[in-house]
Image (cartoon, rainbow, N blue to C red):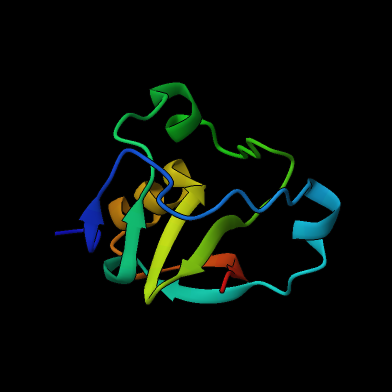
Length: 97
């Protein structure tokens, strides 16, 4: 299994973070098998793009909430990492209480 769980919703409260606020969070490595997805589908074109920056950020966006790490943006980056047999992805992690 690549991810901890495949979800299709964002079970955490709306955080209202915009790109500039995400950019202020230092990226860190996150294990793929600790991530819960918030999307069930993927745009194949985004996966195959060599230098994709879906929201203008090179790093995935992860929300930490109630003990789980939710992959909010960057599903294509995480899958690309898995296809390259990597176990981690660089992500900006927002801690929600």
